Image (tube, rainbow, N blue to C red):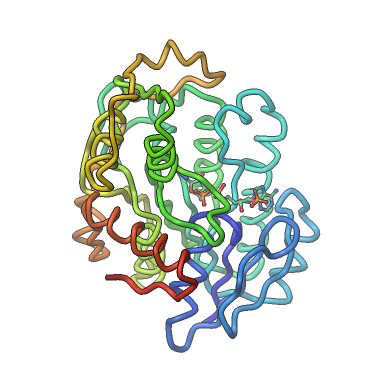
Length: 309
Ligand SMILES: NC(=O)c1ccc[n+]([C@@H]2O[C@H](COP(=O)([O-])OP(=O)(O)OC[C@H]3O[C@@H](n4cnc5c(N)ncnc54)[C@H](OP(=O)(O)O)[C@@H]3O)[C@@H](O)[C@H]2O)c1
């Protein structure tokens, strides 16, 4: 079976390449914007692909002829999307349309990755039947992309996720856990919001959910996140407790005081019962996730390879 991953240089993309390359009988093809920036496992090939280019997208599908596609590529910087809505739409909406056309041409099973930011955050945690009402342009673009997927003639699964954390090769990309760990370690003042609630997701768990969705030939919407719901301030305190870091320099503030260009939904988080029952999804607890992050950082510092503890 041939699987094609878009956005393979990204946080999820990297974890997918790592996980899928270990599965017997699977031919893994990766693609991303520009050159490959990963140390690719043996047997995985890479092609540059900008999903904004419809022709290039079709050509790649023609050469790979994937059975399944995991569409992880997206413009994910929420504030950049707010300030550059046209670029955001070109990647997240039109790019997804190009992926859909190519998938329709080769009759692929599509795993499309989406976000909790399609919700307004008034009444999380959300299950799959909740009504979308995005507050930001990023959220809107991802919701419109979902609508395109749902209208397609494909076999599709939409996996929505929440606040993904994990370690990438060379620590090239940051996320909430690495940011909190570094900020607390520095001892400099840290401002943390006290009015946003999430169920943070270990990147490895999300990659596993994608693989489970392929194996189960899943169709429909699935909410995929970690099992623990918490405020962002609590998350930072749990990061501090895990690595035994001081919290004196931490100041809790309301979201409004940060003056970020894009509005964030206050309380999202997911109810993940459907994924647990139908896919056998079994995510790590937050502290188990931190332990894996810790082991990966240690392995990176000693130059050895990482195995799940
Ligand atoms: N991270 C989160 O907290 C979070 C939460 C909810 C949902 N999601 C969703 O999860 C999926 C994976 O996100 P992630 O966390 O892995 O984000 P990420 O690390 O930003 O990865 C996204 C990847 O997409 C690539 N990309 C951007 N524009 C592209 C284009 N025009 N053509 C081809 N590739 C392009 C990026 O390339 P570069 O490497 O060159 O930038 C990047 O490698 C996305 O659909 C995102 O919306 C993420």
